[in-house]
Image (cartoon, rainbow, N blue to C red):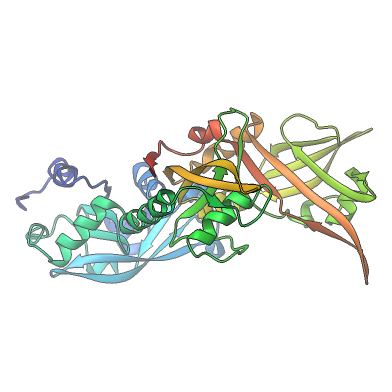
Length: 396
């Protein structure tokens, strides 16, 4: 148990380390408390990012880009819910900041604040308050409960639940595919879990994204990270119909643009690159490169962050059963918190690629474009370039 007399950072770190809890630390200044503005230093930002709380890298500047969440402050033996705002001002190069509602009523200058990620979000303990940890080992006390959950992580119970359900599915052996084609494996697993087909941007299972793929030992196997339509206001063509008119080709009587775009110019004259704060697809023309697709890089990073705060990458062995495809789900790689700062470099290295899947159709009101998404993909062998080391689980 910690002695509260002149508590030190070293002692507090030892306390949490002994309980297998990773924590973030902050000492507010008087100026910060007076202004209700605290600087989010590098190690605290890393803590927030690692645990999927917040990613300043993917956040824009200004009040409209602020992110408001709940935080729980430990006071008088229980947890009090407050607001916490993460933001980057337009001034001072957008230095990362945070603001906790009524923090001056909870801490004084020089106090040691400890941040933990637990079952219902972010929690803060003022380690400088006498008796702050007195209930840490009292069974079922509010503090002990949060400490236990923090050791497992916010989604610890959900991870266990999902693994158990996947193992039940795997124990049944090969599962007949619910649909043929590339999306069949993912739709089959979701059907087994009772997840209805959807096109939502948020994760699939109680905050955990599910990505299933056929087991393939080839280093060229690619996995879809997410889909995001371009910002047509940044494009020289303005819409998908004009894009296919300019860059597409005819096959079997259909005007289409099905291709992979990477850092190298493809047969359609398209190349993926990062220019300043934009991700662009350039089209090589006689007098230079034309921007035919573009995205705000911060929007792309935000999509990646929100989709993959926590992900199960599920491998499936395929087999032919009764004339159709079937899957044996046999292994999971569990990752958290993508390193969004690596996205641009992976594009320039050709490791992150974009698949276009657009065709034109004639309708009552003329031509329109249909697509299966603007799919950003990464080779399975390169997941460790984008995600911190994950945990592997056998399902059988």
